[in-house]
Structure formats: C-alpha cells, structure tokens
Image (tube, rainbow, N blue to C red):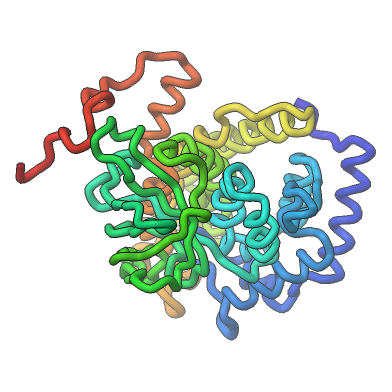
Length: 413
C-alpha cells in the first residue's frame, strides 16, 4: 500500500481543501463534529434543509457525486479523487448521510438500467440533493432474504399495478422517488420472478408510516402500496430479471454503508481521557486501558483494511471485500463500545437527550447499533459473503432455491 498522494492527487486535494474552506457551512461545524452514529441533529436548523443547501452548493461548483459522469450531475472524477474529497470534507460529510441511499445505491442502479432520457432527467437533481431517493426492498415476511418478497406487480396495459408492503425503508418519509423490487411471476423460483421499477413516492396509493425507534427517532418506515400504477417505461431491466438488477443495488449498498460505519472508538477514547473515576483518571485505570487497547487494535485494523481499498482505487483496480469486513466488525464494535461507555457513566448512563452526559451520545449509539447491524445485510449475511466469496467455503444449503415461489411452504398453509 502507498499512502502518499501522487502529484495529481495532491493538486486535487489542495483544490478541494481550498473550496471547502471557503464555502462550507461553518456555523454547523461544531455540532456536526460532535455528532455520532445514531444522533446527527442541529439545534436551530432543519438538518435536511441544511444538507440540501450544502449539496446544491457543491453541485453548482462541480463537487457533487464526483465519480458520476458530468451529464448526470457529477464531475467525472476518478474513484480515488472521490475518496480524497470525503477525507477533506470532514465533519461536513455528515450532511451527505441524508443522501447516502440515493447517491450510493439508487443512482448507480439508474445509471446501469434506466433509459437514457430518464438518466438525464432524474440523476442531476438526485446528485444536487434537490430530490431525495429511497430503496424499497425489505419486507416483513422476507427478513434478510430479499428474494422472498411478496409485493406483486401485475401488467395492465402500459402500466404495472403494485400491491404489497415494504418495511425498514430508510428516509421514505422525506423521499421524492424510490426504486422498488417486486414479484411479477410467482410460478418460477423466487430469484427469477422479480422485476425492478422506480416510482414517484407521491403516487396515489403509496402510504408511508414512520416507525418509532427505541431512540425516539423515526428514520425507518413501513410503506404500503394499494393499486399503485407505474408506467412500463419506469421499469429497470427486463421483466423477470429484477434479481440481477438488485445485485447492482446491493453491491453499492454494502460499499456505501460499509465504508461509512463508525466504530465509536474516537468518542470513547476522548471520554476516557477526561473522565475521573473514584480512584483517579479513567485513562490511568489498567482495566480501562486494556479495553481501549483492544478496541484501538480493531480500529487500526479497520483503518488499514479500508486503506487497502483506497490503495486499489488509486491504482485503478476494483476493491475487494473490504467493506463487508468493515461493516461486520464495526457494527458489533460500536455496540460494545457504547455499552462500555454507559457502564463507565454509571447512573448517568440512563439519562439521554440534552441533559445526559455528553448529550447522550453513547446512549444514541447503543440504541442505533442494532439497526446498523441489520441494514445493508445482517452480520450473518456479511459472514456468508466473506466465507463464500473470499474464503471459497461451501455455500449455505438453500432447499428452496429451485422451487417455484408459489410452491414454497409458508406459515399457516
């Protein structure tokens, strides 16, 4: 691995740094820097509106979705230039989380499968943050088995009529558009009867119900479809080939989420450096130092595993499974870190919100951590990917793989 910028990369970094320094919304820097997984809020502003304004400013100057083609709202930059930008954007990158699904998952899928006129119409406002997109995949009866979905799409003239339910849809309550995976043929094996579409989330028959989480937030939603009509020209890929289309989305999902998962270790180290225990500073306690050392090693491993991916990008190569490893390790690590931090806080660990110690940052981390371990693929899915595609181990036994979907036994039959 080579951690040094090439002359071209160094020039790009300097240009990006200068633009960010001159244009970033500095009034929110302190709050964004102190935000953590599970709690990114601004006291005196709507974070979505602030995020949209920052994204639009970036888009107008050619800094939005850097690796996208220019005709679709991007810059046509190299993958490593995108990484450099993310490094330089620093805490202001927290605002980009509002668009991670659209930019990291929906956009690449649209680029790969949408009609050219749709790409030129829908992608630029997606890149600029003017329109927000969501991903409508998971269902209550499917769990982590995306291909087990039951939302139906039936052809009616030039339209498709959609009926069914999605769940765990991040950002659906403020999204303008979404990509939707449906079942169009239940008489073939489950992976072969799927078809993908994109739709306007304000279409008649679409109902979004936010889910109240343990943290009090409502980032996720149930989405119901009742006779929703989608024109055939909004189909992505061929009829019945939705699984292959969805693989593009899922591949980009794991890359986008895996590369962005926090560990909570920097926050814990900072906290322990200032915390006083009954017998002295926490940082001088042998048990605390042992815990910190353990997580420091893990954090370092994640950092350099990520660097392998960055190094590959710099050489023009395709990165390997680093982001699956990152999500698997970081997802469980932040849960452990947050639990330990609350133990150190003692009775204060039960108090969250404005009155909580450190404004309840670790409480928010702990309550959000289970969601992190599920979204973008559960720990079990990540382990299967690493085992099968990296280590070459035998795949899980899938007894329903070649069975027509309508012949698969279900509870209650």
